[in-house]
Amino acid sequence: KCRKLPKGLKDWQAFRDLSKKIEDFNTVCPLLERMSDKAMKERHWKRIEELTKFTFDVESESFAMRNVMEAPLLVHMEDIEDICISAVKEKDIEAKLKQIAADWAVQNLKFSGFKTRGELLLRGEETSEIVSLMEDSLMILGSLMSNRYNAPFKKEIQLWVQKLTNSTEIIENWLIVQNLWVYLEAVFVGGDIAKQLPKEAKRFQNIDKSWIKIMTKAHETPNVVQCCVGDETLGQLLPHLLEQLELCQKSLSGYLEKKRLVFPRFFFVSDPALLEILGQASNSHTIQAHLLSVFDNVKTVTFHEKEYDRITHIHSREPETVELEKPVMAQGNVEIWLGKLLKASLQSVHAVIRNAIVSIKDPNFELMNFLNDFPAQVGLLGIQIIWTSAATLALKNARTDKKIMADTDSQFQIMLDSLIEVTTKELSKIERTKFETLITIHLHQRDIFHALFLMHIKSATD
Image (cartoon, rainbow, N blue to C red):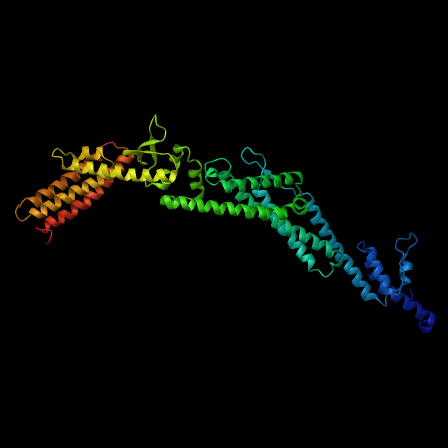
């Protein structure tokens, strides 16, 4: 309407004053809209008051737009806009902080049972998720820390960063201590190792009591942040427990090393398996489950029916059996009697081989009876002894006996044919594997001698 007034009026002072007032109002309108935002708090109005030297009684019921318009808004327009923008940004920061606080108010630790001792463990999967959530929250807090509008909340942001950083560190230590505690609990609570390491067993008893104390506190205060940083209990106790557990583990490692040096085959066995062997050493029969780890193809042993600890036979996976020449008493330190069992096994296998050689030299020797009476490995050795002896004898006498090379070659072929014939019959899987291996070895031997025969070799030196 002002613009539509006659041109003559535009030179009047009243027109100019009115026109300026309208222009100023149009200019200040966007600013008024920003100032009316719900993000504007008392602290923002105080900053505007300090800037404009004008009092805004925003809490008064009579506070109206005209009160705002009386202030020199245009003079400080840019600064007031910055204050309004910061109010919106601060509202966003405040909302994120409230969300973080709300999220961690409902995050509780989850527990799982341990043997028959109750819920003494943190659940692995759920606890890993908690650590992951903490890392996410710390990323958000990191972005808030670098936000230039964070001044009103800086202390609160720093407090949450400290809380979550410390909680993350405590939970990570907690899980390390838990894994070590579970590992060593099997060693030092009951079992035979505790008796041999009394000092470490006593140390672990104290650790065990502290662990139960920690888990009791966690059950009483299951909230993650409150439990971790509500007081200094976990922050101080967990590093101490970790240090004590590592001392126990170091002593245990030294103990295992000594056992391995006495019976070197224990080097083939993992620490947990060796601990199981040593921890059950008072019952000699428990070694059955670990024999394949320390012996080459000794799967089980036979204990005497009446003498509980007397070992009389060894058995392979196939299964084949060798009777021990001298039975072994599985008593005392397991590494000692396992060494005796190893020695007895070697002596007994040597005895079987000696018997095999005697059998081969018998005038009534029958190949198939021999192979059925002796273990497969001795059978393989037997046919190689037969071949070597016959081949050596033939080469030695080839110059004086014209037929010996041909006869020996024929003998080796007959041996091969008899082995092949066995495979045409019904055999067990193990028996078939045994005879196929014998055929493979003897075929190679036969071919070597047959080649010597065809080349008319008459001496081992030809």
